[in-house]
Length: 278
Ligand SMILES: Nc1nc2[nH]c(SCCc3ccc(S(N)(=O)=O)cc3)nc2c(=O)[nH]1
Image (cartoon, rainbow, N blue to C red; front, side, top):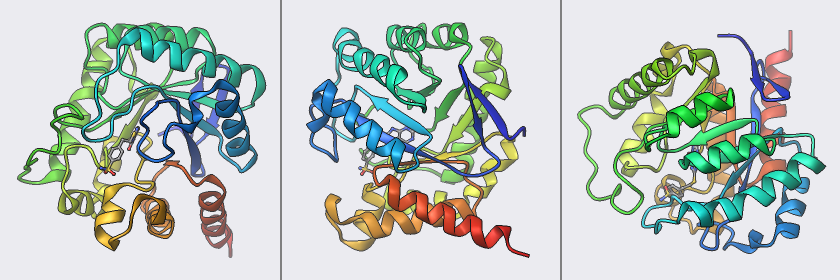
């Protein structure tokens, strides 16, 4: 696939792995306790991640961690829009918007977003048309059910094949709605409707997804697969998260969605130094 991904007014160079910094603008975000509720704090955090080497900032106004409660479209828009507008004005980064809501997709694109990141793969009514109309690239991610019930005994014959099949079908749905495959990024959806065993097996066999011919985005930062494998609380998962970041890069992932940007950028740069050697 081409190594350049047009993202609105910017272009992402996917010939080398890119680090996407996580910016939760939710009161109950699973990791940073919603301290970015205020616009100023959010902008400062985004600026710090950009300075640390993030080339994308992922702005999310709905918590989709297991058990999270739903948020109204209006509330989500009120959280996300001011932050997208401020980052578009102040920072030279690709703004990714983590949303499933058509109104948020449309308004975010109008305010300068460069990537639509939908954990529900544009399944909601109107989402495919909204994303198609923006002309922006979209990230499609595997999930089953909703955050409220997705961890209730998820079962797969073969989790990697199920994820492969799902992403293939969503890509076809996008193509039918006028979103060409060149605009698609794919994501296995670690931590969504998956047990530890599912997450580990899917990570081990991740290269299978390259056969879909699109860039891969991986989001494992501080997630329960690290916590369960190592017995670590959410604020003790940096080392495990960096191990998975390194392994994801070794497996050909193009975008890493992380909380700890500076640390992950050093992992990516160290691997690049070795790969560039004679
Ligand atoms: N493309 C993409 N977007 C994402 N947005 C999020 S929000 C994280 C929600 C969450 C938190 C914690 C756990 S857990 N129980 O595994 O620790 C699961 C899901 N994640 C991703 C991801 O991966 N890709």
